[in-house]
Length: 313
Ligand code: SAM
Image (cartoon, rainbow, N blue to C red; front, side, top):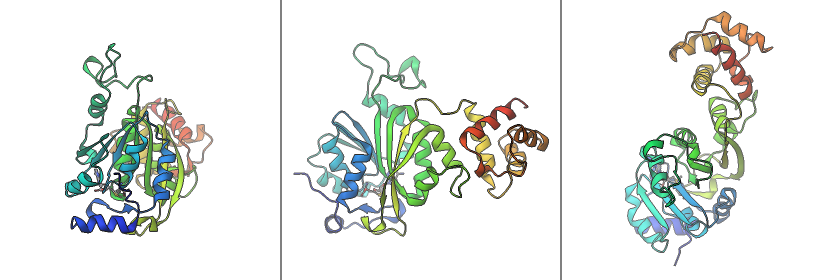
């Protein structure tokens, strides 16, 4: 029988039974709201056709629901002390496989190839043999990612998932409220930053649900939001990706600097020399003031700036 664990009472009971405590080191705040679990499932749009990649199952609270909603679930968990817990709570979830590893050390492309081997008719999955490194073709199935992320690794995990975006149809994440707002921010707002541009380059972000701190045990100091990312089939701007990202990093390295100062100093750390006049000239050509700051430029404007500057080096 599947146990529903999304209450403080059940979570405490399971932790006590196995003499465990929520480990701060792994950002463990377990969900204790069935309404939120259902909100995440809704936002992720999980169906019986789906293979779900769950990051950080914890004591299995979301996992049991995912197991019922999806075709199969692969959950990656770093904390091996949860092994006896998951053996109990997922005992009746035969379609769940646990990988005991740090998600940042898992080769997601190899995992995809294992989950979706080349079809009997030889249709390539874009991964094995000669096609190694190639993107997964559009007609192949993709994973849906669901994760209640530990706050300390939110950004690296999001960036890792976006780098491999052709493996995923969508990514539904519980993140700190402020991080969700930053990712969805419009150019010119206080929250706008490098992570906003990076995520918006790869995916369309939406805040699906606000989640107050009391929905977790133990209760964190911050509120959360469920963020839903739908991967773009192709980026919304066409420019050299590596140059664009170097430009974005340099522009936001020292946030209070003007773009001209940020780029003339910051791009040399990226191995690219840019003179003051080159940057000022490019900004003028775009109708922007030489005093403009990075947070004022949209992704489209960064792409135009990248095109103008790349033509000069
Ligand atoms: N999904 C559960 C829930 O909603 O109740 C647990 C969420 S808890 C915020 C985060 C989970 O991610 C914990 O189980 C933690 O051990 C696991 N975790 C932390 N860092 C991880 C990493 N780098 N790789 C995989 N799992 C990780």
